[in-house]
Amino acid sequence: MGADQVENGGRDDSDKVEVNIYPLNSYYFGSKHAIPSKDYSLHDHLQRFKSNYAASGMRINVEAVLMVELFKHPHLLVLQIKNSIYKLPGGRLRPGESDTDGLKRKLAKKLSLDEDEGQWEVGECLGIWWRSDFETLMHPFLPPNVKHPKECTKLFLVKLPETQRFTVPKNMKLLSVPLCQIQENHKIYGPIVSAVPQLLSKFTFNMIGI
Amino acid sequence: MGADQVENGGRDDSDKVEVNIYPLNSYYFGSKHAIPSKDYSLHDHLQRFKSNYAASGMRINVEAVLMVELFKHPHLLVLQIKNSIYKLPGGRLRPGESDTDGLKRKLAKKLSLDEDEGQWEVGECLGIWWRSDFETLMHPFLPPNVKHPKECTKLFLVKLPETQRFTVPKNMKLLSVPLCQIQENHKIYGPIVSAVPQLLSKFTFNMIGI
Image (cartoon, rainbow over all chains, first blue to last red; front, side, top):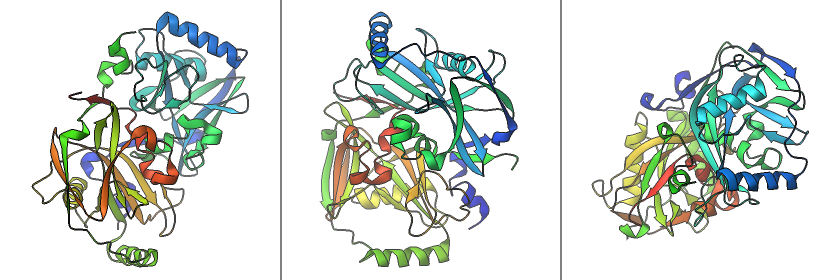
């Protein structure tokens, strides 16, 4: 068995899905003013969620899967908020906004100093989660007989350039977490982030510059 | 919010990934002679695995994700073996065999009377699992520092025609299991099958003829 076969998993050439990732230390990290939360409590969040649904329909979120290399293993960039909440960078689409435009706008807001700083190549959709009702968990399918879901969250693979500056709000931390730590770690990372290793498993990561 | 927006999840048209699925009752199910297991015990299996690795290198398995519609919800076809083992139909590639050829051969062996009976349109690779060593669990990534994995299992979405006859070995049962039952049900379905709902979440299933 040659090294090539290991790298591409014995996959047919026609089926190769390769993604270049770069070392964590090829990126620069700074901080900026905090982005205050819109809600003081879970109750506030629920009230805002319901009134937004009444006004504009289903809430659509777009989130980014950003990968870097560290210790020869792919790492996912995750935002840590209030010490115990882990989220992918992204957020809610405006009515009528496209997935790509919305995700770029949100990445600029959460990870850049201004709109010109970051380069975000929005790639394929990796997965979609649905919330059937205002207070239920999200599922990776539309449950039977649910005709009017209240929220959907779409994950996109976003390819990073060789180098870039990230500017992160002071009330958040940007962590790089190894895929092997995230995998099946629902309790810490929640159902969406903990599914990322599986959603990425079909890709071959080319670790550049190591 | 219109019905269209619910159906495509508000997704951009450019990004639509649609799959037609047909009702379970549009398929016919029969049975054929049992396919005996190659191993009497786990020990036998391990011995055979090791000697095959020494002779031909990493074991590559290809498995099919076959979907049908029942009660307006997507269902996955799963083989039940010995009452407690649930597997996707598929099996081991021969040395040099392509993923597609191997998967079609295995589907004919496990689900058809002969090679001409089934129509299997092998679609995209959904995920790849790796086994680092002979006795470890499979992971959806190559763990750090593993250069010579012993086994890899690739899942493919296989599109079914509008109607078809399935002929299943007598020592197996072909079950249609709703995605909502499989999701996160590791204990019963194991790590690979229980990840299928997430791997499929980016697709829109068009349920035909209901």
